[in-house]
Amino acid sequence: MAKDDKENAWKEFFWNPRTREFCGRTASSWGLILLFYLAFYIFLAALFALTMYVMLQTLDDHRPTYQDRLSTPGMMIRPKGEQLEIVYTVEYTETWERYVSALNNFLSPYNDSVQAQKNYECKPDQYFIQEDSGSLKNFPKRSCQFKRSILEDCSGITDRYYGYDKGKPCIIIKLNRVIGLLPARDRQPPYVTCGAKKYKVGNDEWVDDSDKLGELEYFPPNGTFNLMYYPYYGKKAQVNYSQPLVAIKFLNITMNEDVNVECRINANNIPDGSERDKFAGRISFKLRINSRN
Image 1 (cartoon, rainbow, N blue to C red):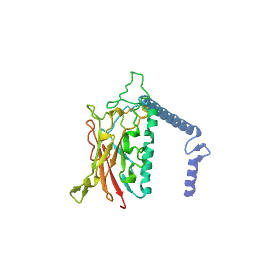
Image 2: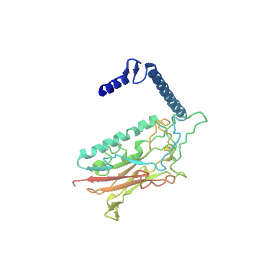
Image 3: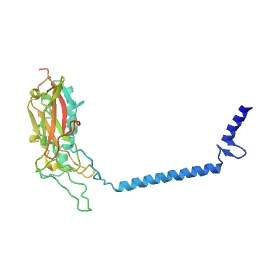
Image 4: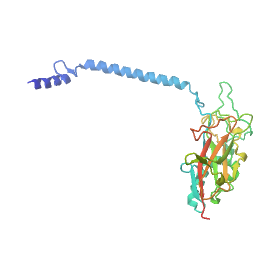
């Protein structure tokens, strides 16, 4: 008997035919609740949309409103290889042709004809400042030509294999883009230097591969980034911007040995990178060129 009463009570809770209530509420009561929540969520959505609209009005399409950037820009190499390791055998074309292909693809926007068509021939050794005129925005801003022929022996023009077929490979270095960066004072351009990277052997002993590295050649001469490519104004403001490059050619690196290399940016307006960030102002990579001879 008690079991039947309990079962009837549950049935009446879900639907009471006498009062026409569903789950303890009439249809009008449920309607008012649904109407309240509908109005509440419409209000929240409108408040969110209004907040986003007001925030978007403060943004500039061409330049970040707030720029919390690293004081030391990062560096990267081309070709990257796997885990920044470039390993190949001179006599086996299939081991190094992917590096040549990667360089060809990377340098294709730097073809002299493309640069002459899209970009401006700037005055070297000085910043290319393009200020706005009051409320009149100077967009799109012009970009300076960086022709791949500047890289000479590492341009892929005079040597289509970039020295990989001779065991004298070229590595290209680029500095990451940072809006508004002025990398030098007193018209002294930043430049790249490469050397043997120190690494730890055992508990307290540090060694490097200076004896294996051999002679290096830089293109442009002295490995400089010309000041005319700075400042950078952003992807939308400077649609045809071409990052300046530095190429390093390894002329007589020791064959059949791992060689750890580190390249750094040197500039009087860029602080040294932090030890905690291995890409801030420097890049480390490994070269191993094998030969059957």
